[in-house]
Image 1 (cartoon, chains in turn cyan, green):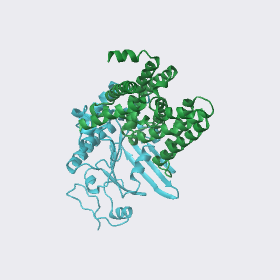
Image 2 (cartoon, each protein chain N blue to C red):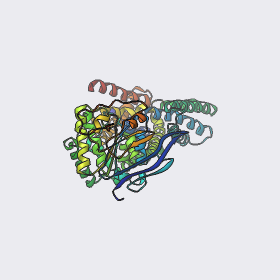
Image 3 (cartoon, rainbow over the protein chains, first blue to last red):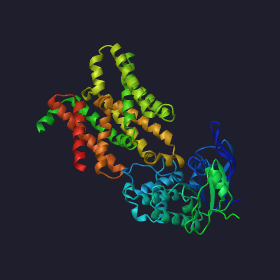
Image 4 (cartoon, rainbow over the protein chains, first blue to last red):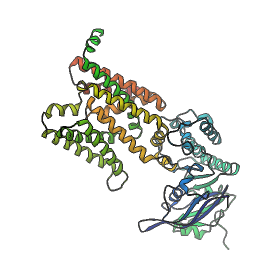
Length: 253
Length: 268
């Protein structure tokens, strides 16, 4: 019970008459690594926003560390879908990472040396400590993404919510990025929910996989049966695995 | 040149004008950066124009026009802030409607009042030489209040300006901060109307920051740079207006514009 990080029970969300999320049930424990796939408009980002307490469910219950999501923002790290910002914005990497300490610092207070230390640790965790004094716009797309991961790590979260973190990052940097996530997951015990389009890429790294299209197709493992994926996407999906250690699709007799 | 300066500062109105100009340069340097970074230049211009409605009303009622100007600017800022949350009317449409309505109201109300022609000109194009010592105190007080707010909420404003989506997700009160910023813009704009007038206020608010940003790194340095630039523009503009005997608002803005074009050409 104490190790339960996410607990979602019979959750429904409507927009007008139309159900966006139908009867969602999901449990995650410490050091779980969940890949969340599904078609566009299937509700993936919405589910993350529910976990962050930015949206309230119309029905059902959602608890993070046995608390309501809006009560525990400091323990959840968040990486939004492709951060769009002015590339010439006058802000240093260190200052960007410090933004993640807001939930621990609070309104009106200044960042202290503990915050700065945490920011350097987070930058070291993503291998960017030597970039602390650079302007954010001077970094490559992949490097910027690492900085945003550091920003989501800097509050020492026990749960990390990542919304399509590899969009706009080239494939070599993507591999590096996924390996970084595995490291954080395995060595620091951080539970991760990773929203992605790229089924085959993430299946290599995640421990569990779920497919969301209004309903959540989830079996508590890293396999999905093809009927689930067909139901979720509304059409047969051809799945090709490039020498992956795990299968996404269970073998059928 | 020394003679000229000596000459200038013999006049009380010139000293008051310079004090008002310097205080507003500080105000512009600080608020202007946030206007640029948050891309609310058009909103700020809309607020300035809408303030004219309040000024007209104040005039018509025989009360303090600037007080009413501040009131209508704040209402407009709040109105735009509210509208931008809804889907039916887009933000820039709302601004367009607010700003034209404010101008129209101001002109009708001022025309109905007595002695409008000279004052109308002053509000539209500014008249720093008509600034009183009370105005200087008002501008200085406002500048201090805004500096204090920015000091206290520096990290919050930085998050809001850089990445509001993330800010909201981690519990930063982004919507309230945005309304607060718009309110600060509203106050600043109304005060600056005295100096350069409604039509040109946006230039004084944005040009110092825009130039400073081309050369300096880090928000505090850019703010200081833009305060210094604002001071130069106001001082040079005033001197030129005195020498050539032309309106001070326009010469301040033209000085700023010349600097801006030269600097943009140079930095390319």
